[in-house]
Length: 313
Figure 1 (cartoon, helix red, strand yellow):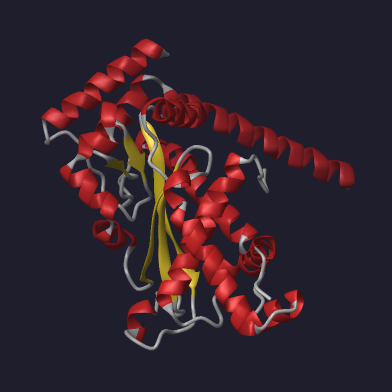
Figure 2: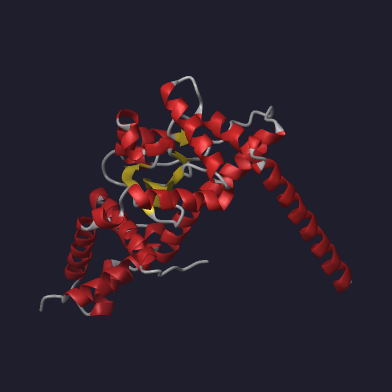
């Protein structure tokens, strides 16, 4: 008998949510192993076919909502996403095996993602060999080509994305200052603010792998295209869950002036987007404000711990 669509959905969800083999999946749902494999592939193909409805770059009012969401977090205006990469462990492939051997001495493919303020994937690139550096993955991705050739289309109003120190800083991507031991206090605080803001992409990866534990390790499949498709399909399902609120977790004038400065940076390539953002946060005392409050919080924690230790003694 043909596997019903409802049963196929259950089988797919069970497969990506656990680390069972196809034989175990077949026994659990009383089907042949070949049927289990074809069912997972069928649901994977379906999710990828609707991916454009759920994984999409924000536009218009949606983009402004994302920008406001990031600004409310750490007072950084103009951010529409945070970019990072994560490794998906796989069984060593037959061809070009060494290319997938990463720095952690395991085989993997790379998932690159840009995430909005709500942990929703707005752009993904999946399947690059695990030996590649994060910046090289970006250089080989479609988003890089579009950003370099048609920047105004995906980064209107001088918006930008943020990343960690693996990425360079340019007009549409802001990364931390390189720390060679000579950073000023303000630059260090800037790095801390940027790091805490881009933590949303780390949280998104954690939520993705926590919900879909199959992504922790592919022990059977050696077909890289199938593995890549399954990973991409879970990203679609991740966004669907967020859309359905199914989660397993937990001043205007100044902004206009900031946007004007950002527009000037497009006209003059000698300007550094990171420097403009750094100067803005420093001028608005945002760096000092967060540093001051973080110090107070640290002092409070020390006092609480001291009180606790005294009480226990």
